[in-house]
Image 1 (cartoon, one colour):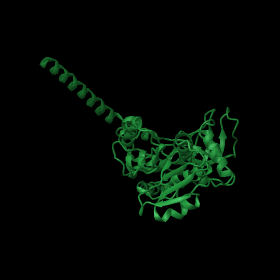
Image 2 (cartoon, one colour):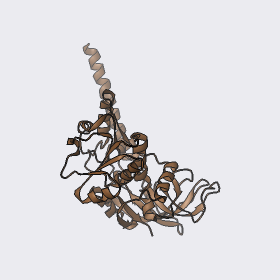
Image 3 (tube, rainbow, N blue to C red):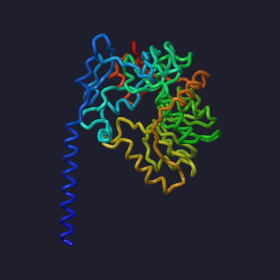
Image 4 (cartoon, one colour):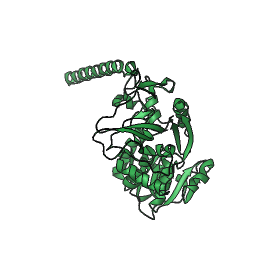
Length: 370
């Protein structure tokens, strides 16, 4: 037995050393394309890039202007918007992201931004649904730039004529997250009671309006200064979290949409009906654990879910052209209106990110591109 234990220890030690060496080598070999960012003469555009993690490492510089492939369109960006996703990438947190392919020592992808709205300048030869001059909005990596090249069959659709580029740019991630969280994860039905924790944020402002469109009774949780704004979006009830703990009330809910998981799962389960659904939005916040972020809470839900009648889980938005079109119709009809807190110029992106990190933005923070 001693001999067996000794061999097990030796094997475990060797595996540990090999794993350490693998991580060490991978860490120091992780790099990016910052050395190749210099744009070709006469074919450049302004964009935000970052060669190292940290807000101080954002650069507003010249990069090569993209050329659309046969299935893409070239869009001149008029506006973009900031999401928690962006500062997660900028800071490289939670740090487990780095081991999951984002880049151990340096960010693998040096471009930032996803949400955009703008004007089509050119289309690939296989593109038939768009033409130059069309005003569009959607999602594409590297949106903090003067131009992007989304695929025509992916997350891009025509912009409603009655909304601005700034409003359209705020829709993609936040609007789709709210729609999919309520419709697909929460499976909300008319007459149900829905609580939205963080009702005044980017996802929350869309969620309040969409939940009302689905015929539900909506309760929004926000701070004192945002109560009137959340009511104006259609919330039937509002709770000021600075004065009242919503988890200690007597009301029970069919669906809880948790944008800011600042209460334990057991506290949320207390006000959830036996067959209710708890949906945690997966972005997380700057105060989350820097190593695992929202994934720690996800593990909790996975452990608890098999033993309770309530459905619990985390969701991340799946960017879909069809859902963008649905949101476009909602805005065209005036049933949903994006809420914009502040706008910044593209060169001012670090200030926009810093403001978002404070956690008090009302609706969306938008970037204008001139």
